[in-house]
Image (cartoon, rainbow, N blue to C red; front, side, top):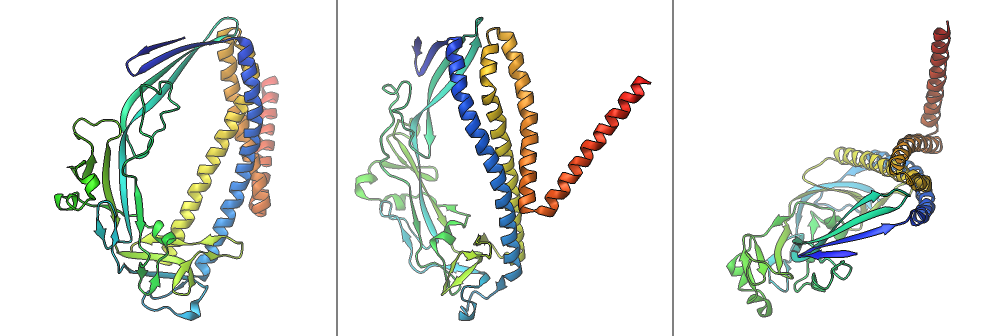
Length: 391
């Protein structure tokens, strides 16, 4: 059953206890797969972290500083650190707007005015184990960097987005960019940040291709494709340009002829570090190590969260059966959430500990010894407390 208002659709559905149990069994099977995946992720992450840290230490010990204004063939295939000024010979040009800039990169950025669907669901348990769900679909017009596919909307006919944009986003990268006497690859340029926004001007507007010129207006620091910037319509676009100008750049990579390629370490990890500014090799490797530690912790949290949700899914059928009495189902689900949290924490730590034994044997064994010592100590304290209470 569904009711409709302007840009809002409300749908009411009912599910029996048998339907809930059936869905929970499917969820349980997915939960087992998610559990296996989380264990693999945690184990793999520790190996990745160790291998990356090892390769970065190797790189920091072997890298050599070389001047940007001289390419020495004796350094071929070696890991080098170069700092200098970047430059380009030929300007980059946008064929639609005829924007021309001597830059490492020129980006045509767009935003398109589209419908966006928001879905909210609220469920209520019913006596007997059934469930009543109220789902609200609301629609709003937003500026989005990408088209939103409206064919999957609940109310697709009344909220249609265009199938394509009239002016797409586009990136232009210099092929003649250099760092001193070294040629910069598109991969290196892709790692450089610091784009500036180009100003939208009437002079530039007059150079736009004729088929678009009459449709475009200047709106602040961007071009507007549509009738009225103050009253946008679905399909209207905002276009702006970002430019990465030449400047000081620091690169750590393998010297390959007069250019750069990723350096392959003895454990077959690639090193290709890029930072803007005059950054020493030691600083660049320190930043890379810090980024590796951050990624390691992010993936640990992701692995733990996946394991927690896997536990909830595995226990789902029991929760579904307990929903025969709504208040009992809520208590059971809360209890399972607490159990799943602590079990996930314990299993995550065990997986990480086992991974450390494989990848960091000394540290892994030391941690297990400490853990066993803590368990023994807690057990003795508990025994002593019980004996004291009995006396």
